[in-house]
Length: 191
Length: 392
Image (cartoon, rainbow over all chains, first blue to last red; front, side, top):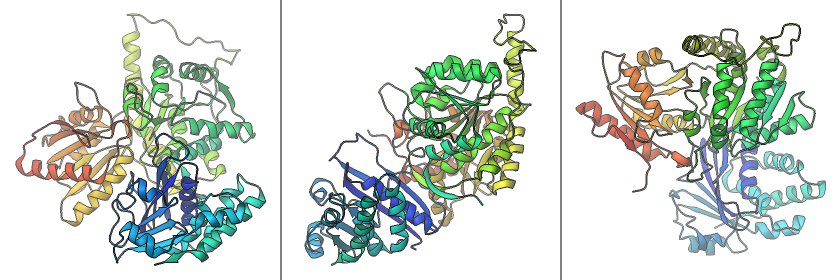
């Protein structure tokens, strides 16, 4: 696990982005780390742009407040690249992970990413529809995060997806989400 | 070692209440404390606790019911925020004046107007003079630990006073972070069996609460309330030491961070202390001798101890997440009183920050430290009270 990593999530209300940040925190905790997960609280409307944050560290986390220089930027809805400044505060070694059917090269150009920054893409919504019939990209994004960042192992992530979704959903939906997590891990592309 | 979980501050406090299993809980929901009591009412519903949950029509009624239940001889808890605490105002004084050990997590939130649901200390500071003990928590772990210790402190026979356990609304109450729980059996054992003192329900020995006391003895009664407050620090220290023995987590009346050899210091409470510690580490690496003092116990306030802890520094910045309009920040006033006891008389400034949940960001701490370095050099304070992180 990385010594300390800060992640910013961009999504739209109702997509499960906040849940993704929570599950990632749970997974990293069971991996032995210190964690933080929190959304930006504002008017909570379906479809509105939202941001959520993770801090993950080997040592105790004392910093509160939004992540200003995210090493990892997860974009759960590609249309947000035109709506908000997703690159704000991105350091030179930032990792972008975007939910899109497009190739990483095209997204790299759109983001004007530096050569030193990594760009990953995964068709998380398509995977979700195929896995459990709804365009909820969070579980496939989580699988892709594992691959792109190595912040936690795939097995630990799947365990935590089961734990989190198991509280609310039927077995069929849980299985669909674990499948989506695995496919997100396998199908994420770097470029 | 207890179970390690990733939970919100509210979730952790609700679990502490489940582990303690109070006799009575009267509550009314208010953001951001709603989630705490909602989770606790879930425990009641699922039969995880024996608590009689009284759902009332307002916070004034919630505190009134808590007072009645505590006087009747029960172990009592509730939780609130902001306007809820404000609506409890007259009952807060009655709880303290009647010496009822009610425990109340206070999820700190700004007061209206304008309407704002986010975190600042306006609510807690408004209850400063009510006679309640107040503990402020930096993070979810501290909020959880303080809630467990609060019962022991409040119910101690030298104390018998109500207590607020404060944590920053949203910043801590709704952030998920790593918390180490204490095992159920250990909490139960630590808190112990509740001993009712002068319960109304002891029908063999009838008694009266809430008498009229006029000019003959009211003044003496209030002095007695002050006297009992002076006994609180020793009890908090004893309870905290016992808690440390059980968990390894140490708590004092206040926390000192890199303060021993510091030339300049920041005094700040709650979650902002965490952020400040990170920035202090960065300045320490550059050779700046900066330290931090974080009051945990705000009422009673440990004047003598804090004066002793700060007497060697040249300049102090006191950061208040609340204001007294036209006056000084409430924490500043206490620290200024501490400085009056020192021969060294360090320079003290007051920064008002983070009202209504305005983010306290690293550049604000950097601004404060840079200014402290200048003040320590020149001995001159340009502006005593200043708003930071404010849009011009």
